[in-house]
Length: 123
Image 1 (cartoon, rainbow, N blue to C red):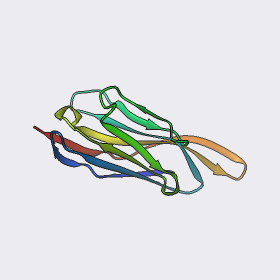
Image 2: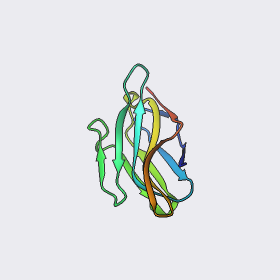
Image 3: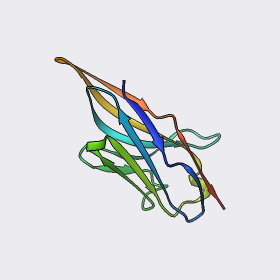
């Protein structure tokens, strides 16, 4: 019902920066929290950053001070600005959105995931 499309992944050198974008599309929905997760080879998926509809943010300790999550509610888009990147940031990054969908007087909640975008940091 709600589709997420990520972009901005790629290759960057240690110390470099990269900006990820994720746009949500669909009908009769509103987005609550949006988040970025990542999964490195052989590792569990981890939450990188989360942002509420009002702009409150949370970050994993490993990225705090280096990454910034933001959103444009008018565009239903969430961004992740990654700075001072290290090889430990290499992973597939997934966008996630928690949303409400509407149909008449009925409301339901759901969660959508993007397809993932590869981020590779070279040393």
